[in-house]
Length: 247
Image 1: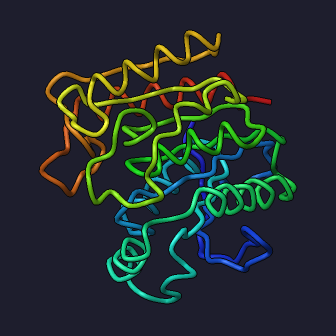
Image 2: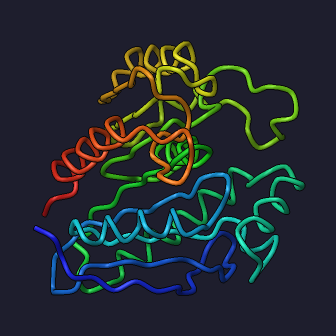
């Protein structure tokens, strides 16, 4: 069932009480609906990520995407804001968790919420989705090719891109991982390292790697886009959320 929806830019309370920009897309109607905190990729709070938020709303989920770069460049274009954040080493982990928590709390306050929440992130947001799932109480989390959850970052990756595989023991919910088999960050070896940690910790997870796909295979406006991989991955995301976020 496809839902009518509304979408707009709002203000939420993020880490340390800061007011930050966020994009909210929600189905029209009384619900109840599950909530998805959408964590944008390294290029930032851009049109492609807003389209993903609207897709979640059309599928019957409240989606809230905090602008993780709002403090560095309020009102700036996604490109300028992303560059400003990168110049400062990226988004600090503690701040990320606070901003995602703010998005979750905002969705939970809406009358149409069913109280169940998840995160999903792409690229750097995939790492941050895993971080949030290890730091907050969630019902589900999705990591779409999140670099530097495991493995060793390359020189120049920035101080806020350190591996966090040691946090696996704290994972609060089932995890879906979607990866390109031809990706370098995360490489198949990095994915295998994370999978080993999840098995050792007795966590519930489901991983899928797509042959012929590299990083950013979801992004329709890039040469990296792989339609068949993206189509299958979207199906798996909605099956996963349908199981874990239903009323």
